[in-house]
Image (cartoon, rainbow, N blue to C red; front, side, top):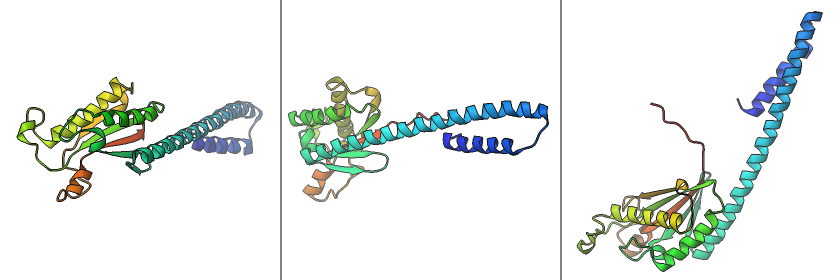
Length: 216
């Protein structure tokens, strides 16, 4: 039962008991019940105050994080999308990797350093790293590394996660690496400009929620 609703229920019960008529013995028992209800009511009110304080602190943290991500987006000249559940940073391939490669470039390490500097301060937030490519097939000379765009995008997401863990100390329990290959384009693959937009890594930053058990 939610604390605010519990406060209301206890208050109504208390009011009903105070309004009733009873014998001397019943009054004594009722007084004990009233005392217990008053105690529960006070505890519920205190819990409401604690929860409101925690909510306000979380909102303040979220606003501060969003401000830092806004500044980072402006600094790196990268796209950012916001929703009620997460903030997404979209980093073009050219800032992180050389063409058809999954090893971070020097500029890629610098970009991740900037991202990690912010995220390391907000340990209550998780990060989902998604790799995406265009629909140009992997050339045979790269088959020894990647047989498909799906493998390339997954390798890039994993490389980013590995760097954040091993080099920047981000907790591995906060990170997820996913590769979608060419299957979630944001632009047409019929033009060079569109293909360039599709080659990207996206960072989804969201407050960690409660763990929900899967029912069999």
